Length: 329
Image (cartoon, rainbow, N blue to C red; front, side):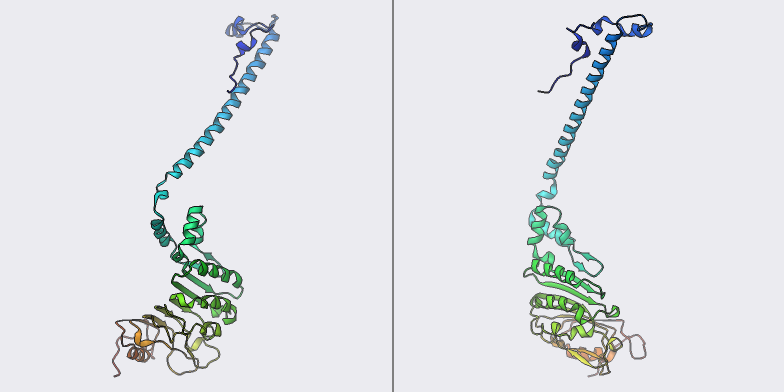
């Protein structure tokens, strides 16, 4: 049991000094008390006793306040245990996570991985994030600076590829050749992605031609069984060094490919042309950007199953906007 505070009057009872009961304090304050009385020494003792009692009260108040804070903290914990989010079934919470973790973005100057942030909230969320493989399967990668830490980039990519397990992959790779980034610099990233090419389902590429022609990339040929959508921006003749024609054959065999967005490609045999082999006869959805009309017609002739065709910002040789297409057959 906690010690009870002892009133000053009780503390003085039984002592040799007079009790405060024998002193009318108000009357003493109104009088000239202390000048000619012999009880001054007792007043000093009573003062010390009262100050000690106040000190005991202050200690007790501090103790009660600390106890109150502990109880308030425990109340907050109890309420957290009863919060509605803790009653959401894991499969529903996983769907909510999916809306928060649409894509992870990895670049030289920033790394934004929402799934990693969610996994740092609590043990339960970390376990759910780690076991929901689809949250790790959408990755945007930018290799856009010669001083980029490729080892760190590859490490982040490997983590996502490992945690995604067997989920279909949705990838975007951008390489900025204007900043001096070449195939050699980004080769470790391409090799890392290439080891999982059998899981590529959607792929967006905005890369220099030397990356498309690099052995690390061309090795995925004939190993794209799940690829259904390809967004490809090969460089035109103005952005190719050396100036010679080359053909990218990586995507010549993609049995599930149905959707293609193709931009910034000159399909003539001019120096610097980058040609791409595509299984045109199985495509159903086509989008052309920055294409010459004759090139579009040639590709449409081969895309016999295409039911949706979108032409965006396409100009003729005289730089006039493309307004209509006439069949060449």
